[in-house]
View (cartoon, one colour):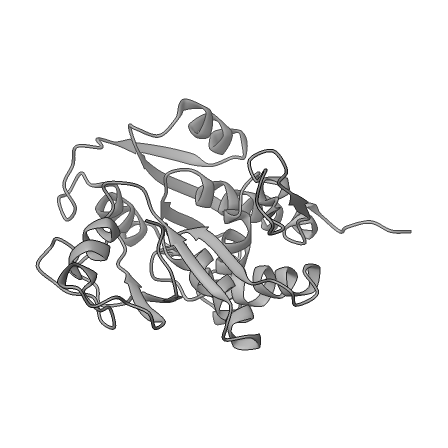
Length: 267
């Protein structure tokens, strides 16, 4: 019989679908990887499972343990799915800007949800990351994944998403475009095909208001620091070579970053 042992067997191996209408007039074949077909409906299912499995392998997460994480929703859903199957408790800290639907979804998966004010500044007691850290510290046998710094975040995509794209396109992929977010998806996925073919373009997209818009234009994040490896286009020196982009998480005081090999930026 052909079946999966549990719902976690459905994470990954998502199909590619050709985009037709919005690509009219283009010669290139443009494909979308349908990460919404993961059981938790997002790409974050991959890292939720990966971080839990890494913690189990390292002996950090033990039977009966509690997973505590700061999340806007999708990573929490990925963690909650894994926890529901494996028997862990979950406590997620979200801001009051998170959608009601995601809060209800997390509770339906058995998680406890703590809501904090979105107006709280990073580093203050009410900030959602600080709150999650405090709860984790106060909860015995707890695991705080810290998706912004956990190596299993990009690692999951290097092991799964990148190889899937390479196989599905028969190695013919020429460009990979992804949102930057925590840096995990674009860095982990982009690294695999880039190692196979250095000519592949890895393109990062981030919304207005992101530190990367300022970084693209000035070479600085807007917080007084310059990211390494980036030539200042505003000064007339075009960045034609591959550059390393450091994605700093919400815990700005911590030195760990993800490195993203980016060869192009949207205009």
